[in-house]
Amino acid sequence: MRTRPVIGVTLDAEEPGGYSKLPWYALRKNYFSALAEAGALPIALPHHPELAETYLDAIDGLLITGGAFDVDPSLYGGGPTHPTVTLKSGRTDFELAATRGALARDLPVLGICGGQQLLAVAFGGTLIQHIPDSVPAALEHEQPNPRDEPGHEIAIAENTLLARITGRARMAVNSAHHQAVASAGPGAVINARAPDGVVEGVEHPGHRFALGVQWHPEYAVDPADPLIFRAFVEACRGAGGGRGR
Image 1 (tube, rainbow, N blue to C red):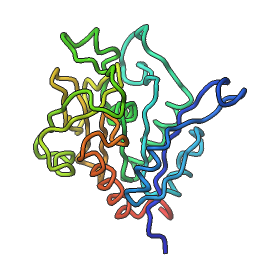
Image 2: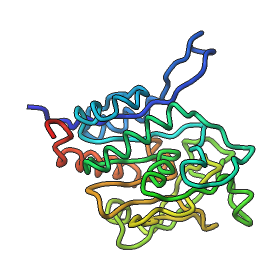
Image 3: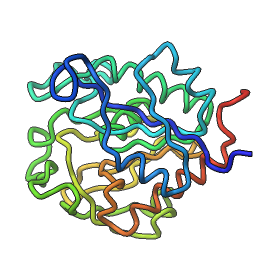
């Protein structure tokens, strides 16, 4: 009998150079270690949109990770592409297919950083393409200090899943993004904001567990960060997975 829920983790994709002379997948180890320490069995998901449903048959939950790229504005009616936008269409195609499939099955989904933005798009929401052009007096959301240190605080909205998980009204978070959620989508809720008003989290109460956070809780810069992974893993444990559905 399996005691650890299986959680699929999306990978980043890189062009030739560095590790390999051929295209390669990559992901920081702390995504996997944070899940394992919370009681999960994490597995990596290569980018095959045509296999998304088969992957979902085999997992109990989905973690959409971040990366140094952006969601195509055409996917949310964002208008012309801002000059700062970087696309990885193969990755986005797969992640959107997997996320929409997971939501349709009511599998638990956790989106981190860019994964939170993609989750909002899957909810039917929209994004700000470049914070400095859209938010007057915005904070430095690409923090200059190391990622394993906090960059700013967030305020957590009352009566949200995030508030119940953390038991907090405020958290310190790290910050590594130039885009942000503009609208969370029909039925979805904005659960956290930075002091400048930038959205820092979304969730959808119509699903078993559908939570996105703009920061990187896998670094555990705040004592409440590991609680997010524990809650996600527990939701996956209770979900029973997509297997056999």
